[in-house]
Image (cartoon, rainbow, N blue to C red; front, side, top):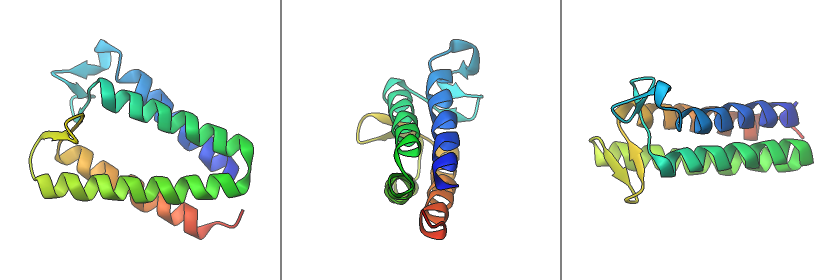
Length: 120
């Protein structure tokens, strides 16, 4: 089950990373007119998706570790975004706004629940 979830998760992340490059879906630097996007953020999503897919294809343990590590990283990003408190750049490279912060927090929670809640 973990492996399948990692592959699905990875496909979604990779797709969003690719969609972020397509002007049709990006208006004024916002994906779907909600989430801030930029080149670096798209590359991070695409790379994260590829890593998730590779973990899913590899083993249950790799998938479990992906969800735990990914959940911690995204939780940290959400925390930093909330601490920043306004639309802007994290680490001078990843564009975030409040919608991104809430999305990152939700992704972190789901990832950690999957990572700690499922046996491999």
